[in-house]
Image 1 (cartoon, rainbow, N blue to C red):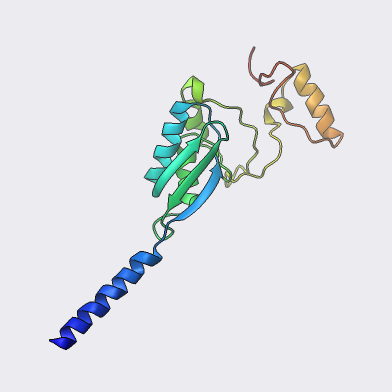
Image 2 (cartoon, rainbow, N blue to C red):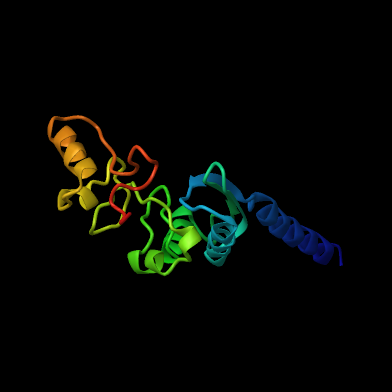
Length: 165
């Protein structure tokens, strides 16, 4: 009987140690978005990918996630968010999903990505300016060729210079 109790106690301690060691990891990830609808979509996608907690701040554009490292990863969480159309620190949102976002959820997409991996390379997104005849694009392309760091994101009126006005 004593052996049985000792065995039971040892087994319980073994499992309890595993539960205690399974502390959730926490990370803050930049995620593009604009509004309360974005907040819901981003948090839902993060939880779908296995985050135990997700809180996106509209002002800072930062997502705080907690997750079990044995069950998921930040890459899986970011991919789930990208799948619903939002750009994250490392993964560009799926273009088709971005196009289907509600108009209030569409944000300026200024990060560049490797087209094969969709990984963020950081830097300037000038693709919209390369074939444009708009003066703001011509100016920015000339500055880029001169070696200056430029972003094709906002004109002097605060609007995306590539959007139709």
